[in-house]
Amino acid sequence: MADKKPARKEYKPGRQCPKCGCKLADHKNRVSCGRCSYTEFKGHEEKV
Ligand SMILES: [Zn+2]
Image (tube, rainbow, N blue to C red; front, side):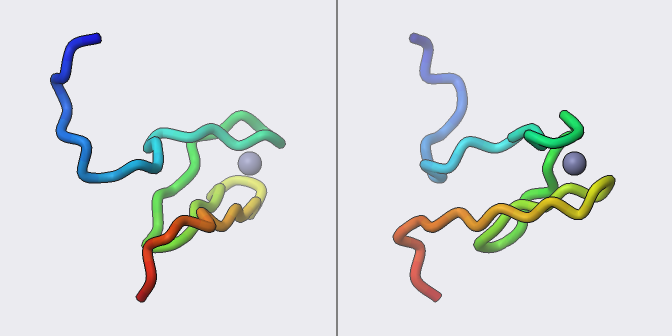
């Protein structure tokens, strides 16, 4: 386990859309798919 990337975000970037497998766009508190408009809220403890 090499610590190449800094652990500033617990949420893993580069999620894939469960519907179409497209890469999800990383937003502030959610991720969304630009292809099928699938949106998934991170639900993290990142309070605005
Ligand atoms: Zn999609």
